[in-house]
Length: 436
Image (cartoon, rainbow, N blue to C red; front, top):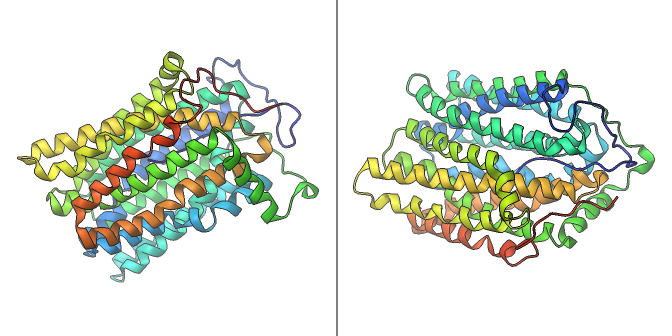
């Protein structure tokens, strides 16, 4: 499980402003948000088409071992561990839209490396590691900026609607993208599919170039030393009674899901003997659950409470993973596929419900001047564990096997809910806002 989004903007805060625009009830006439929305929707769709490319190249074309697959997965998230914390401090100093554009252009260039080297007959595993590492580093800066950007584009009372719209359309893209990518792999090679990634990043950059906002850079005189700035963000997260349990829950969940997801291509393509398109189908059907999660999160929160929905969804998202290692005992391929689809659907619904609620909450309780550092600190703590878990997944699978490692990941995912279950969030009807 991973997490995303943005919010909060009290008056009188440096770098913040009250934005003119349409009534709070609608974003229909907000031209700049709609440009961002259109560009990111197209970008996500293209990236979802190409997301199968790297693991399929590694497993099917370069005969990667379980350890090499673990290293590849670790490389894609290592940047959150290596530069995640200072990235937040830098993003708080930089203009976020320009940072996202620069990150997108770097990712366009790097995504083209794989097809070029493949056609040259020179592609090797270390090239995939390097590509994953650089794209991951650029993604750190893009994601931290993206999570902190909406408060500078729409009014505070529009942020929740904007987040839901962005996440809802992203989930729609995730339905068709992986399935189409899997089908395309039947007629084109996996390295060529990487071109879709490049198109997606380019679409995002072009859309952002057309967006206008009112963010202004913070004055140099307000810049604390980097270490001081980073420490302030970490302290805010670790000392906050609501952010701390959410961070621990998400971190444990990401350890479990990384152990599982790292081995998913090997489980499906080798252990179960499926073709790559089945992997795309599983991801696509799972995204239907994600759409429902994005669409129903707000209503679900109103019914059981904004705080309560977080531990409830956290409990739910660990349980369906039990079906994944059980697929090896399915009597036939049809039942195995059905089990995979049910697991992905339920997990995606609960993860999106959890994410939409907790991300909006953490931006509501955070002062705007700390948004970048708060998001980067959480990303460091919840995504920094992922490269270590990916390496551990490859090593553990080599020692005890793929299926036993899946059981370990599933157990961690089930236990991940405990920090939020035993927190003030349980029974909380309304989440607090940041002090003015």
